[in-house]
Amino acid sequence: MRLLHTMLRVGNLQKSIDFYTNILGMHLLRQKDYPDGKFTLAFLGYGDESENTVLELTYNWGVEDYDPGTGFGHIAVAVDDVYEATEKARQQGAKILREAGPMNAGTTIIAFLEDPDGYQIELLNDRRESE
Image 1: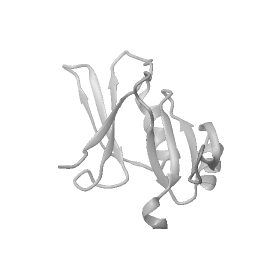
Image 2: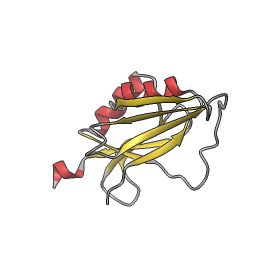
Image 3: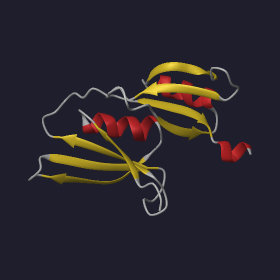
Image 4: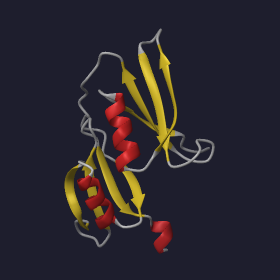
C-alpha cells in the first residue's frame, strides 16, 4: 500500500495551478474536465504518479470559495533551504504566514505559506538529505 494523493477543493483552478507550479515547483501531471459532474480535476506533483504521492485539485464549476475547515492542518513540502524558499515565494507574491525560523520548542527550521484558497503549506528541510 502507499499514499496516492491529497485532495483540495479550490475556487480558481488556474490560480491554484499557478501557485503550486510557479511557487512550489510542482508539475501539472494531468487535468480533466467532467462535464456531466460539472467539475475539473488537476493532479500536480514532483514526479510521476506511479512512484510519488501527488496533490489533487478539485474545481467544482461555479464554486469560488471554500472554508479550509478546522480539521485540516497543512501540506508539508520539503525544500533544500527554508529561508531561501520563503524569500523566493515572497518575491513571487505568496502570502507568508510564518517566516522561516526554528519551530516552537524545537530546532527544525520551518515556514508557512498560504495558497490562493487559504490552505497552509509548511516548508521544511528535506530530512533525508540531512540524515
